[in-house]
Length: 332
Image 1: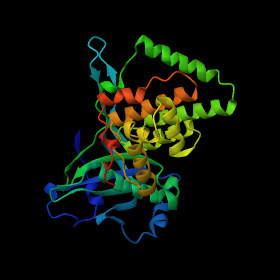
Image 2 (image 1 turned 60 degrees about the horizontal axis):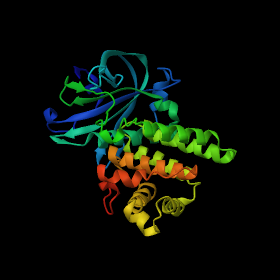
Image 3 (image 1 turned 180 degrees about the horizontal axis):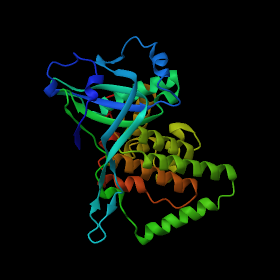
């Protein structure tokens, strides 16, 4: 969705040579509590703009009032009642920003025809937002109220979109067979019947972290990995990777080496180490996410002393699991 705006005058000149082939990502955050009169005082200490790998980040406090901005939100994803076809509606509306104190953040998205990947551009501003929160408190960037990608030429258009949704894949069901209903009800009943209160609380907490991974935006792929990994570790009593390996050995009758190779556990642990120790981003696409869910299922049934179903191993032939193969890591 596109519309013209005059926010360009808030961006310094000279950052590109060809405005027709350049763009910038622009965000506004509300600042609370903050009066217009306080803006001069609050901004007096700023002496420069930060950079990220040589790419400028523009930020500043501003007295702003804007009407008739475009805003687009992803509506309820649903199935057509007759055909079952997935429908993803977008709701476009006008956004009016009342006069108030705002924090501006912006950075180039394309410079003279060379365009960055959108997640890279967004991450630049995310990191600066984090630093602002660390040093000034989260009220300095209280709520993101507007975001768009602007063409660099004066009075150029801007574009925006709603939440990015991953492609619906058959590996994620719905698989509501009578047998799966039976397994679901068996598991739910067994959790409710756990008499050890600490164990019950731990299992429930692991399910909450699992749900956080499932509910994370499809753009937040590394965040998803964090939640699923944490869910597995809580379920396995925080015993570390070898404890989980031993439990998978028990479930499948495998050796340590078979768990590492045949269940791809070594590749998953390598990803975990790269993520937590080196900050490597993990592109947890849908098939890889589903495999972690199946591992969790196997471990949950083991923790509840239920008969194993071999969910992880049996799913492998239907999933692209190249992410978990040795030496396949995503660039930071």
